Amino acid sequence: MRLTPQLSLSFNGNCEAAFRHYERCLDGSLYILHWKDSPAAAEVPPEWGDKVYHATLKIGDGAISGNDLPDDRYQRPQGFEVILQTDDPVFAERAFDGLSEGGVVGMPLQETFWAARFGVVRDRFGMRWSVNCEAPVAATR
Image 1: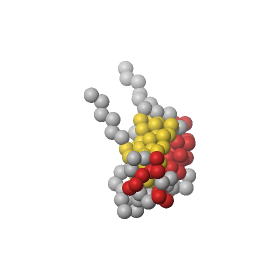
Image 2 (image 1 turned 90 degrees about the vertical axis):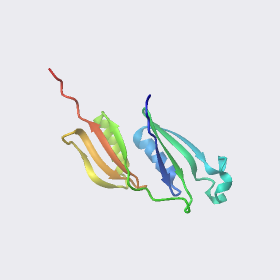
Image 3 (image 1 turned 120 degrees about the vertical axis):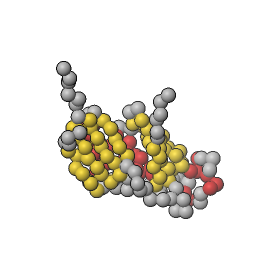
Image 4 (image 1 turned 60 degrees about the horizontal axis):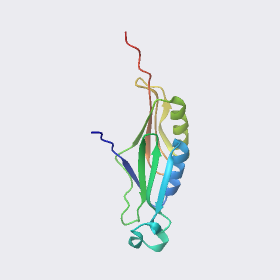
């Protein structure tokens, strides 16, 4: 058995902008379904039709999902962060720089005792990210 938890991020109208930004920053592949094209179109006001009913961003072997929720259902994200694991320092730096654009850096991307690179940022859409680039494992004798 393989357990693969999937993260779903909720937004209040800017999911498409966020996911297009993540697609660029993380070299992902994006699928978007708008409310007006969904089976639940009648559940939202007509002006909400172009908002995101469901988005999936595939990044390497993983994926994150997202959607826009109307004011009466939306809750600001809190109590979690997206942890981006990589073993490529160049990708870690590029991803962190992209996620940091317009955001607030909590810890600059840097070498730590456990990682070749590690940093924390709250992006311009309010999502908190940790970028962790594994340190090379020392060879054992």
